[in-house]
Length: 75
Picture 1 (tube, one colour):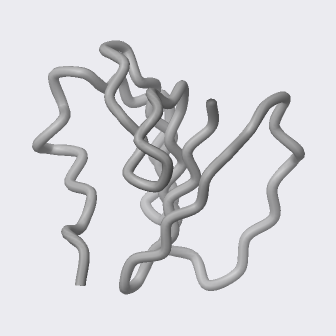
Picture 2 (tube, one colour; picture 1 turned 135 degrees about the horizontal axis):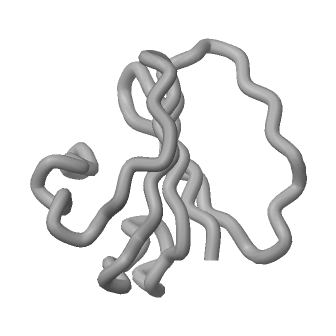
């Protein structure tokens, strides 16, 4: 099983914009690579909710599913 993406390991490069307890929105300030495509990502949405609804992003996005949460990386 692939490693879980740990925001605390990358905290130096990320800025938290919103945390509702079940969802978090992070900005990538140091061009960390997306674990899905290995290109730098712009923002990261982490959701522990079972059901989610998103507005269409303005650019490409990648989704990573981990146990108990999904990660959406926008580019």
